[in-house]
Image (cartoon, rainbow, N blue to C red; front, side, top):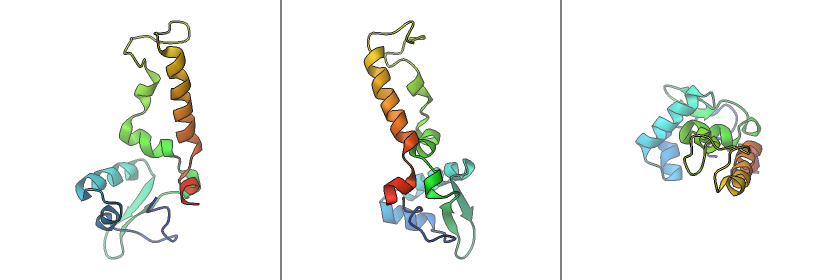
Amino acid sequence: MALAELPEGRFLGANVIAETIGAPPNYLGKLLQRFAEEGLVVSQKGLGGGFRLGRSPAEITLFQILDPVEDLSPWSGCVLGKPTCSDDSPCRLHGRWKVIKEQYIDLLVSTSLADLTE
């Protein structure tokens, strides 16, 4: 969100971001590198450099931000760890978990950075 609120074309240094949001600089630096690999942010070295969003805040969803960090693919598996869990072969929590999982993923996919900064 700190990058979403930057004026267009400006960059913000990783240390400044870390200080602003209260994050450990090393951890944030690794996250920013990962986001750069995903095209979510752009980095620029040198004076006036740092990081900025790679796309408009309206084009970046919470899912796109969290998936590279949290790997949301396990959400597609069984909450109880069964090797197969589906509507045809459900575990005992499948029906209730499916509703929660779908709502969570829908929230992440349908919420953009712009939604959070308005």
